[in-house]
Image (tube, rainbow, N blue to C red):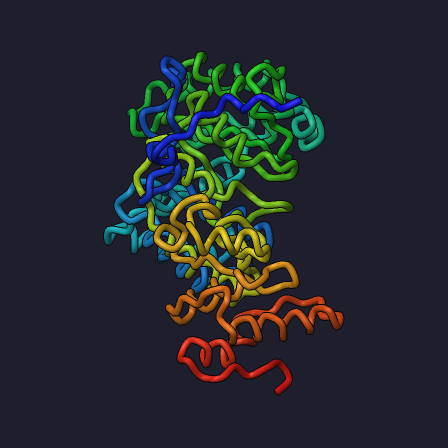
Length: 446
């Protein structure tokens, strides 16, 4: 009994979805008719916390290194508006020197505005009055995990009173307060919403330039990007309720951690629900598992058409700096890890040889300044050799090339003899270059 032919019709040309996957930029979000969320902000951007949360998470920042990182942030964002602020500690002399250097650069045209971070106490508020910043973040823990155990004797009312006293001091100093709602994804609705209202009421008599901002912090990474999940874990539900309470998209930030692998998903859920700013770090540095990797967030914000195009190639220099500090990203870290665009499979190598976009999510060399790469293993086959030789020499060898086959057989013999490590270009360069110039192949061990 013959099987019916599948109901698949051939077409004269392939459909590569060029609108969703354009040749010269990151993948784009294409909405079905009527499906674009009405809550989506007209613009979205990011803010940086490397000098605060990144340092707190283990980056060894001297004043010089901190300013080098700040300068790279400026090169990264340029005039795109993709990265708008960076926050600094103010407690140690080195941090104050970093802040002063950043403020000098900002006054000279650096595109990233320096802000500060303090605890929400009147004493700390007095530290930042007169430093030259226009805005300060203020740690305001809002879950009962904190309010009942951080204060003495403890409780919500005492916490709120302490925070509001500090807000008043910041307003009186002529600054904009940015309330960091710590542990919001484990916090009760009937603390967050009344507290936000009280801050707005307190700030009402002051100029619009001092209108408070609110940073929703998923401090332990337990937030969910799910619309239907209950308060407090649903990130989109919390953002929507804060918008309904009168906050604009521009006055809201979201600050997630990656403890449960949801950091980018939660960031996008916050933006889709009406939050304009995502706070994190370039290359994801931060406490424990790290902050939101802003390059990953911005890739998708670009795809949503919400932000300008930053220069992602600059992040190679940032990673080089982190390598100097012993803090480079893991080999398989997305986008910028050593192996992020490296294949070891022959079928992938063959695909790259035939049509490289088959195994690339976008134009990686152009947009990230990184090559599509390959390591030779027992599985990479002749196709892997063809790819590497073409990439490094520009020479295209056919699969039946005698010297190429001999080199492949030589490597296969090494793997059959028990070799477990991959073969990198540097190991075969001399032999491969002789193939590309027509010289005799030198067998392994010769």
